[in-house]
Amino acid sequence: MRVCILENNIGDSYMYLLSWLYEEKDVEEITFVKDNNQFMKLVENKFPDVAFIRLNDAQPEGLSILETLHEKNENTEVIFISKNSVYAMEAYKAGASGYLVEPIERKRFEGCFSKLLGFKR
Image (cartoon, rainbow, N blue to C red; front, side):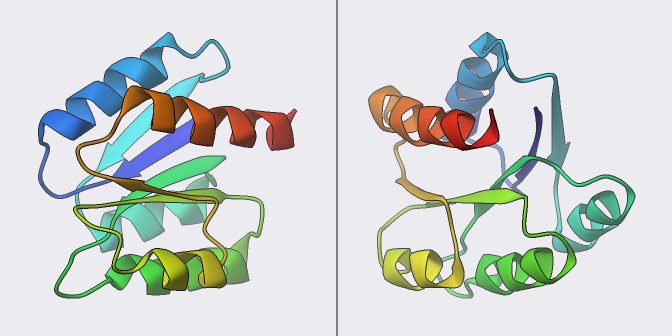
């Protein structure tokens, strides 16, 4: 499974996320990108199976990225990460597979990710 993380500011939550992903035996590759353009270039070359995308509280650009992703390839699962749950309903309506609120709890991550593994197998 190929995983991509779109985040422009690495914080403690992302360090935990990376360590948990490295523990997953089904994860073959983790790519980290810092901006939307870099992410879309990556998607054009090879689609990730799962994308973790930061939702900015001021501008939830990740929601439009999800729409573009689904236009190109509906098989990429997207999990949004945000500091609050304000865009959770919009994210799920747009087709998100998960929504994690910071600080990310390992139990919540595992529940969300194991659900995706079930779909991908």
